[in-house]
Length: 137
Image: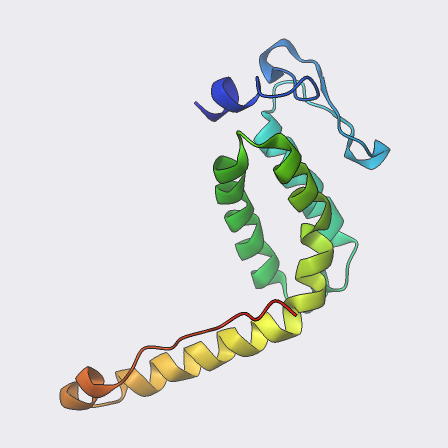
């Protein structure tokens, strides 16, 4: 399982089954795990960071979707603790800053799908898929 495989990758990540503390560089990131897995602790910490930012009230559905994605990222990066720690520290801030662009793209895709569903079968076959290019500026 995730806890068995990923909690042994670093001295700073300790087994939750024995109720020890999970800690990282920042005192804000320190939490008592108790019976929670480090994944649950990370998600709760990121959620607490999001709650302190304008995005939490401006776009709650995006925040919930982001937390679902974070769960998948934890699985992806569970064997690379240093990378995950860097991502974890920045994710709330980056999401808050990029929310207007993400909202615009999500609205555009929703309108495009709606237009496609109103098209005839022949038009649907001829329509192109959307390609989104992130130029990382």
